[in-house]
Length: 435
Image 1: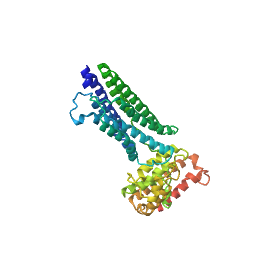
Image 2: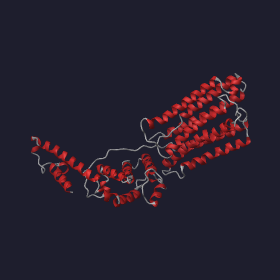
Image 3: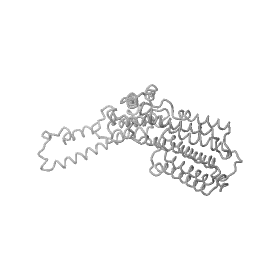
């Protein structure tokens, strides 16, 4: 039994590895089902790759424990089985360090967005590199000093600084999370961060207890087996619960429809949903629909109350990531000055944040798209649909007017004739035909 615990390959080791592999499969299935089954669009930017890197880091952490502590029986003759590869580099900068660093970046983003009400002053991948740098330096120092024994255990005087680095990163995460705890989030960012803190702290506790038991009862095979199994199963099961921050969603509300008057200015016509749907189809056919889609997003933003800062920031961040950021999927054609004003704004919840950009885009649409739209088949189809809808409405009204109860009510007598008088509808539909 002692040889089994020392060299690995115990039945309990294989059970622990099997449980961990099953956890990996369930975690990947849980992450992929919404995109494969329900066809949910993949989040863009850091909202996707930060979560993806946490999944990779969690897998690296699992793999490093299996390889470093010898859960599988193999001899450490080759470079790829070295303790310094698995117990230092894969477990540190590529495992637990990467997982905590991604969490700190997420908390840093939320702090800037919802406390400072501005975009983070530094790009996420740059900030992640800076946060991860101490882990890389620490791993390089351990690689040079070679403090590990044949069982990949560190000497006692290395444990305090190593655990201190882990605790320091948890403290940084607690600091950023504590600064945003008064924000009432629309989604579950704060709860996910607190869960990540709790899980990370528990993992450190499990590691410390397992290390202590392994050092004190080094010759006790039963203690070795139990501590190794608990370390692997608890670590990955808990880490799998600490992943993921959902991306912000769009706020969809119903819009009222009005009759269309082609003589109205373009900015007023765009307020009409039927006209906007026709116009955006025409713009997309010309490969220039970004401006109209941007306008639709601003309509949704305007429906959020000005004092609802949290939802306005969610929506503003979505608009910036989709339309304003250089290289965005639907980047709009606005001036450099206007773009920088938005990207460097001190208040993401400001009601006039996108005002100058909208003015520029409407002017651009008037000069380019609008002139061609009036002679396009899209406008002709819109007029036909409007005429059919008006005719159907007139027929419905005339059928109601044929009754004895309503026949005595004339246009001049109808107290609501200004809004839905049949006489006025007939004259307005005639004007629309002539136009």
